[in-house]
Image (cartoon, rainbow, N blue to C red; front, side):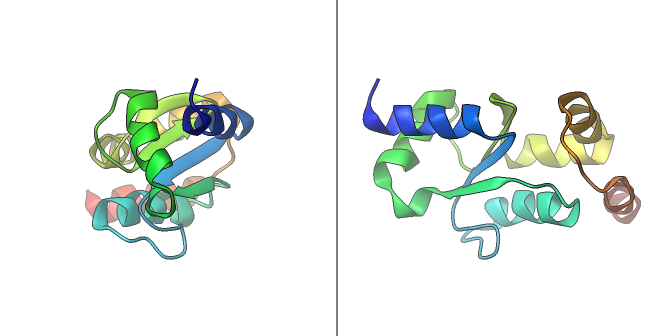
Length: 120
């Protein structure tokens, strides 16, 4: 395994929730990353953000790791969940709540409900 894949593997498997994104959770650098980080931030999820713009090896490596061509990418308990559209759909359907509940990831249920109310 390459150095980048090793680092990705350690990060994904060593943390409950990881978001590979353009920018950081406090300063997203693209709209798609901003949307996913915004959902996680609003729901109070404790997660690790990895800025792919800071490391070209990670930027390409995460796409190879997941066999998914776009960023952002969300991982929960070592498993790839999806990108922006998938996370948006899961948030609005309640599937993301269920995933977090089933995975033992704490989040603000009221905040998740408010997202659905605002987009309903």
